[in-house]
Image 1 (cartoon, rainbow, N blue to C red):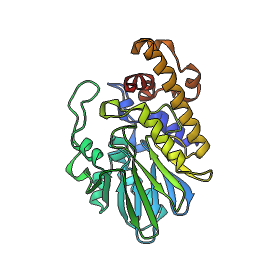
Image 2 (tube, rainbow, N blue to C red; image 1 turned 90 degrees about the vertical axis):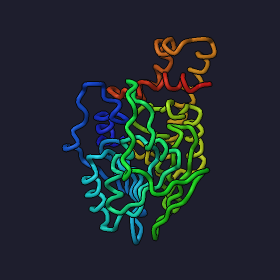
Image 3 (cartoon, one colour; image 1 turned 45 degrees about the horizontal axis):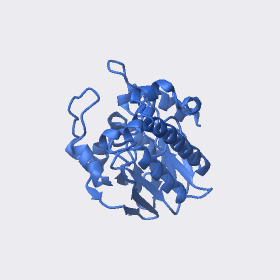
Length: 301
């Protein structure tokens, strides 16, 4: 794992919601946007929040995800250092603020925001917060100008084609994985991560079965040379995604057996059924990842 990706994930966890109430969040003024060249005009950017993917064509740029609101200028500068071309499209992998926070600012710059229709609904009508407080709708300028329904759509600039695939009820009910087939790069969103246990947003239709199905789809549509940009953590390869999928399957199997035996949610947590997996995936300080066994339990029908 790249040190910068690991350290940034430790800093912020999956999203700002991982910061306990009353605690100080990340200092965005000190955040740095780090670039990893994946070849063929594709670059991964990592800062504070979900990883981004930049695809440079000959007349414009496709940007996958936009991290947090205060990082727009730094992200824009990092992209300008890669190419002076305009950002024509912003593609969101899901609605969480560490992936959509910069939408409004990039839209003002002229980018067209494209998402699955369920993601647009979640931006407009987010669920209540952890303490029951009403969700705050995204500003009008952050809403997508284009949405798609069904299983997928395609977005193009000259020299780059992005295939958007809706993977159902995985991290949320509005997940999109973005495939760049000519470049053999896949931006997975929060369906795949390399830094810690994933957050499964059960409140908005996410579930462990959908996470496994999504990982299976991504693996099936890759090869040994595919480069994967995960939600959090370092760029990985097919072996890395297979190892991640194995973790998901193992966790589901153990927790499903315990639930079938009548164990309560708290009993499953107290039993530490994932102790061996924790050595790799239980990232210190990541509150959302710490809820992984609970979210798996709740999403098993």
